Image (tube, rainbow over all chains, first blue to last red):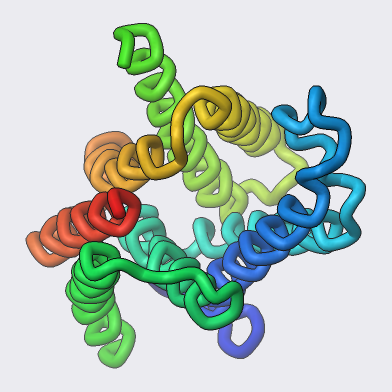
Length: 134
Length: 114
């Protein structure tokens, strides 16, 4: 945890960037896949028909960015901290689907989201304290 | 579920965990060696290969099972990765990290069940 760059190069910022890029790509992929679902039914199971949607191409760019920033994160943050924190995406995806795509969230899913948030807080808290001391 | 599909789920999960460990190890080596190094390049390519195998196995499984059935296994990856990082990469697994990983996994399973 030494020699940590600040600003854009800060690994915690990059972790957020990676997560946000995954989130955006998932939403774009869902939109793009829905838009192209009617094309060539005998090929649709491979997913390649999705490439007909420009949204899918933009999503691929976001996937690449998220992968690169994730590699950068791995350089600085222990995997046992970074990976659990990256699962914040499992909270953000259903919430965004609810906000943006008008999907519904069941009571059981709300409970799951709450559990993940508590788990994230438990992982993040000692890390935040450690960061303050440095 | 047949035992064969269970094997496929397990293999894709193991490939995912192995991929993350290899990528982490590769990126740690770049601090000392930089990117133009045989060890770093081979680790990175092994990591990316593992991730690719896991990606296509998951894609294949998705053709036969619902996402809500397969996603809980993704939730388990949090526990697997934390344990593997502690054993293979010698990362310090504190009590708080363990509890946090368990809660996150349980939450992901709940989210995907509904």
